[in-house]
Amino acid sequence: MSAVLEVRDLHITYASSSGLVPAVRGVDLEIAPGETLGLAGESGCGKSTLAMALLRLVPPSTQITGSIKLAGQDILTMKPGQLRAARWAQASVVFQGAQHVLNPVRRIGRQIDEAIEAHGSASVSRAGELLDLVGLGARRGDDYPHELSGGQKQRSLIAMALACDPLLLIADEPTTALDVMVQAQILQLLDNIKRERGLSMLFITHDLSVLSHTADRVAVMYAGRIIEVGAGDALLRNSLHPYSKALTASFPIIGDPSSRHQPRGLAGDPPDPNNLPSGCPFHPRCTVAIDECQSVDVQLRHAADDEERSVACVLVGKS
Ligand SMILES: Nc1ncnc2c1ncn2[C@@H]1O[C@H](COP(=O)(O)OP(=O)(O)OP(=O)(O)O)[C@@H](O)[C@H]1O
Ligand code: SF4
Ligand SMILES: [Mg+2]
Image 1 (cartoon, rainbow, N blue to C red):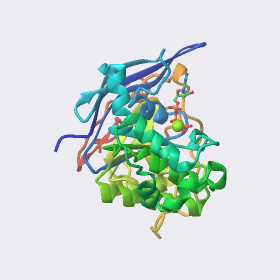
Image 2 (tube, helix red, strand yellow; image 1 turned 135 degrees about the horizontal axis):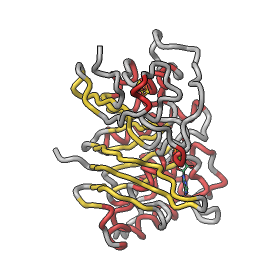
Image 3 (tube, rainbow, N blue to C red; image 1 turned 30 degrees about the horizontal axis):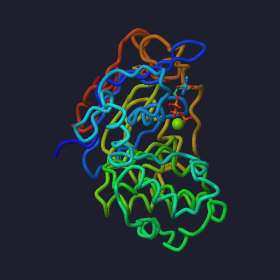
């Protein structure tokens, strides 16, 4: 079956007052129908930039090259009208702390219907059905945003994102601002919806333990590139890239008694996109780096003993 999302050689460069910021530097990825791809990495590695660019929701001065095909259509060459139609109807976004997106003086149900009217042609209210779907209950459609808790607001935003039956839901840290119990409920909700509707999902998080429940495949980003990608469980339990290893060691895998319970921090910080180290950008923090890491142009390549795994490290594949 053809991919819902297919990204090839994507480069995204912001134009800021201090110069060009190469935030995403050559990303390839695809998401199959009904598949969830988890995208992980530390703060600043380019996750949100990649997510927003998928619907061209980046500042107009941003340079984007490569291709982004959503249901076979290239987002980067779409005219504004086509792009407006693709947003919500083909892909929609739920992001962290997005509650301020809700209009404080309009009832929740009305806001959901307005989203449908603005992007589709529905003449019958679907707000009640969607609020039921996200477990809020149709009658909460009469509430104003201030009458809802953080978790309930996030549920209504998920309802809104599903209003036009998108093929792909992009969830950028959708639970980070919520407490642990509510986080778990929202994750369960997203998983149920994905299964019931056959939705594809790009699930972005800096918390790898969240992905052990939600992701079919996981991609790890560092300094604007994907440095490891593979089947979710296999990657989380046995990551091969030294950065992914450090990242997975930092988070206990929920429900796995053999996993670490003492999160172990990763030393140092990710590089500034304006001042990237030569060679492998992870080399200043890598505990197993060899001399050639300072100059080698590391590319993703298949790992020897796992067909689904690709890794960008000179040591992977060497004995
Ligand atoms: N509008 C912008 N103009 C210039 N630089 C930007 C802009 N937005 C983000 N950046 C820079 O691009 C890089 C990637 O940022 P991005 O927000 O994509 O990271 P992230 O992986 O989502 O991080 P986080 O986990 O903190 O959300 C960072 O260095 C950031 O400072
Ligand atoms: S290429 Fe070298 S520096 Fe980069 S992750 Fe592999 S061993 Fe470490
Ligand atoms: Mg982000």
